[in-house]
Image (cartoon, rainbow, N blue to C red; front, side, top):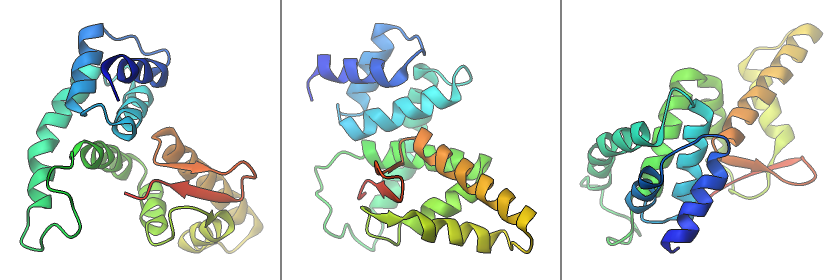
Length: 177
C-alpha cells in the first residue's frame, strides 16, 4: 500500500481522533503500510482515546517490537515464516490482545478459544455456549447475564478489529494470523 492510501486508511479508521500528519505518516511507515496492521493500530487508538494517541501508540509499539521479535526467533524455529515478512501485524495484534487481556479477560479467553477454529465461519452459538459454561450458569437470570457478558466480549473484540460478524450474525470471522 502506498503512502497516501495508508494515510487515508488510518484517518478513516481513527474516526474522530485528531492527529497530526507527521504522526500519521510515522505510524504508517512503522507498520510497513500493511493494511491489517494499520486497521488494528487505528482500532486500538480509537478505542483508547483520549488516553492513547498515535505518538503514544508508536512508543508502545517500539517497546513491544523488541520483546515480540525475540519470541519469533526462538529455537523452535520460524515454521513456514518468511524471514523478510514484517512483524507489524504480529506486534499490533499483540498490543491489542495484551490490553484486552488486562481489561477484559473473558474477551481474551473467547479470542483464545476462537483461535482453535477455522478462522472463517466460527459458529456464534458454540462461542455463546462456551461463555455460559465458563460463567457456570444455573438460573435464567444467570443466563441473561452470561448472554450480556458474551455480547460485550464480542463487541470488544470487534472494536479492536480482531474479529467480525457475518452479515447474518450467526458466525464470527477472524484473520488467519
